[in-house]
Length: 293
Ligand code: ADP
Image 1 (cartoon, rainbow, N blue to C red):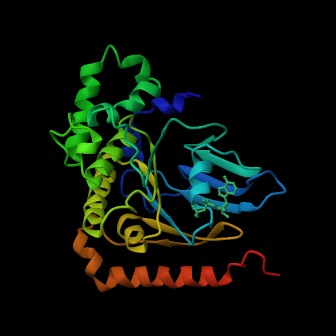
Image 2: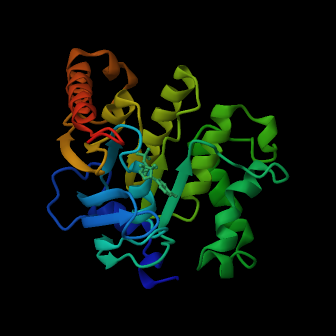
């Protein structure tokens, strides 16, 4: 399962891509090409059909669309958790044929283990992913320092010894992001990570992920229902349609970085959100109803 690409230091991704990855030419870091997947085999309902999209190295991409359009399926396909019946998926130039370990993932539910401290939760991937698994024992202090540095980066300095149940929902999600990034993945997949948080905490977390991306230069694919979140964070927004799930269109977000949160109150920002809302309304109107002729 472990391949040579996994050892590529994060720095090298940042140098060649970086957080301002927009404008780079193909090939993409994540290339999904003509992908079809039906759950329950080829005769089943097509979750995605002829799905094609390409995300540049270092780019922050957001995927939006109506429920059931295949956003989560796209996440599973790009990380090798499911293999398509048709089409190709490549990450970092290599065809995806099995689960990838250069990926970090975070979901709406932080799912931290309650019997482990925050620090030990963050270090969990290091016990599983090579080459860290083999190095962990001999280089424990180095890895603890790395985990503590991550905690500082997300504003949780000093909270490593707390258990998850001693943290607020927002703090747990910060720790969850640390855990997703501790093995320095080249690709971060976020599936509605801030969906369960209140509006203020969500905006704080936007700032956290914005700064992590800026500092580390990894590639991000964010699945979200929140158009403001997509526009605020992403370099490019892909709009998907349902039945069949495929990319309807994409929209570059050419708002200057760094982006202060006040940007979300400007007319320029709201015009893009409005434009995307119209696109999705159209996608919903065009979606055939199940059972309709
Ligand atoms: P989204 O994340 O955009 O809501 P999903 O990728 O979860 O969409 O689902 C896409 C389509 O595939 C939906 O019609 C959904 O009902 C179907 N689907 C998802 N997972 C499964 C599964 N494990 N078995 C059967 N159908 C599924």
